[in-house]
Image (cartoon, rainbow over all chains, first blue to last red; front, side):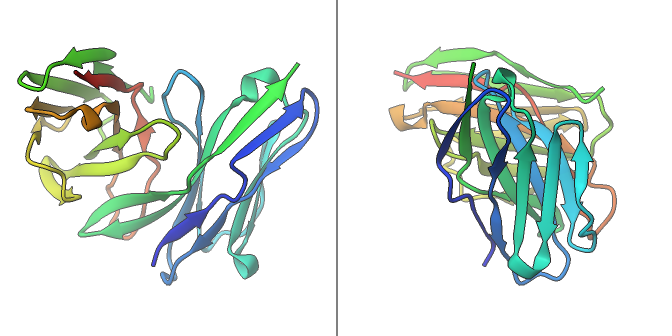
Length: 116
Length: 116
């Protein structure tokens, strides 16, 4: 079974705080892909990062960083020095192929509110 | 340019109406997707087109009819919808060029549909 769990439903922080969004996945596939998307109030999902199961190297992009640990089946996302513009719902997703096509299994999302 | 466009942005329709949602991408992507998203929920996959052929139908009711006229365009024809079909409908596209690989999907801004 393919499953993504984002245990934090909502998180509220004050601007400039660091915040980590948790993502735990389940899969029996040996090759799989993990993604993070941001959905601001406007509604459009914005792609943030893609990782394959063979690349456990952590990634940093500006204030964003990702920690991929296969041993714990986790792919956590940290925002450093949060800003009000980071307020959004963040989805973690597991990517796999089905019937020759790509398919994403989304977690339920974590709503992040950054207060000024 | 990683842009997916969708029209209209908002749509209100009666249960006896017939309407269509449109999606367009000019990234040369070979896979296109329709998702339905209810409030406070993750996107739910409806259909996948790969190389202009329908490859995944997630048991969607026949009142939703997808069409892929060419590799850049994706339509969703709506007929005899129910109030519970009111949701944000998102279109996405991805490269899908290498078997065994799952690429990131780029999403449009969505069409907010209300069925009265």
